[in-house]
Length: 247
View 1 (cartoon, helix red, strand yellow):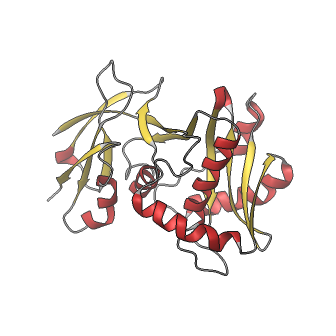
View 2 (view 1 turned 30 degrees about the horizontal axis):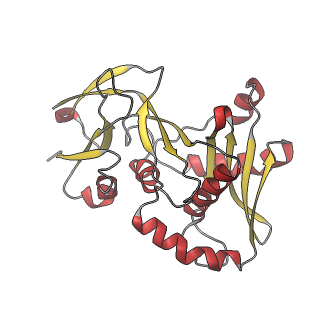
View 3 (view 1 turned 90 degrees about the horizontal axis):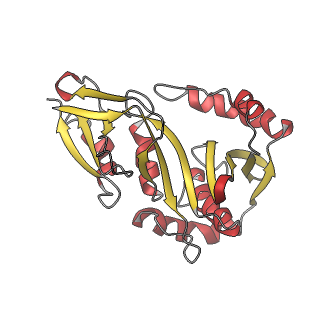
């Protein structure tokens, strides 16, 4: 099967001031509701500050280590990008017992909470909560976006297909927080023949010219590894995902 796709797409969701949980998947919302009272009573705090040298001194080593531990790592020159940009960047930071567990770097263009880079530890250091730090901080990001009157929460730009670039799990996470992919203004239109694919991938089909939102994707996988990725098929209200088997 020949699939036409763009090499990049962007993710975003509308911010609903009346409901900070809007868009989160059922399981994610349930776990957040169970975790928030526990986290609120623990020695955990978050704060928003301008990005500065002190913040980057601990964030960059954590970011580079975590990105390099992933399949198909792509470490971005964050300090250079910030220095070259005319945007003001902020850091939404997470601390447990005053130890940093990660942060989200964002800006606020056109009343949007726009995530540029983020990284978090996989787990809490001293307590097992029903939700991991990364998902908890998506909830905090939604709260901050509402407090600042943002209209959208933009989850950045990704390379397409997943599996050849970043992990398929990244797309699953963005679906789980209610984000939807759409066209980028600047991208290259390419094709892929699923008969030639030798590794598991998730590829989003390029929509019709007059459509902005991406509505169709394909999970190309083996029957043995399919269970690892079925989460991406659970959000048909965002993108319909069709499974194609490699064997």
